[in-house]
Amino acid sequence: MIALFRDVLTDEPRAISRTSLDKDGNKLERKFLGPVPGCAIKLDPDDEVLGGLHIGEGVETCMAARQLGLRPTWRWDRRARSAASPFSPASNPPRSWPSLTPKRKSKP
Image (cartoon, rainbow, N blue to C red; front, side):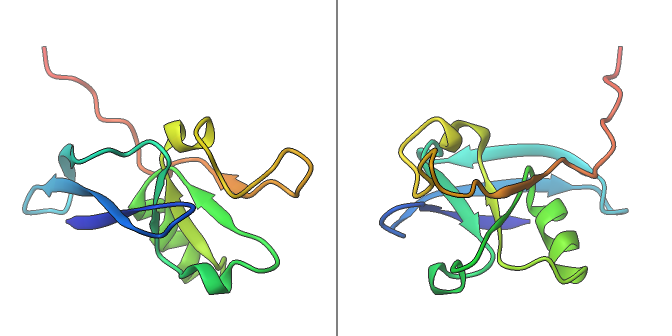
């Protein structure tokens, strides 16, 4: 699975998320190419972020949230929250959803 990270302020393409899946669709590995801090995978465009924004920890969580009607939705990197963002402390913060993907047990 491949997804594009965009700068949260300028909307410029900045990085790519590459997630390897096995034949059953289970996540094997995730790698990033490019700088991720200050970026989001914007599943909905900026002009739809008017009255609120749903934030997820992973693309899979965000896609599931969108299927439930929770829009607009972005996959926002944890590090982006500490970087420059369009959300000031005085504004309504985005609603954040934890990952729904179970943690894999590491192999010995």
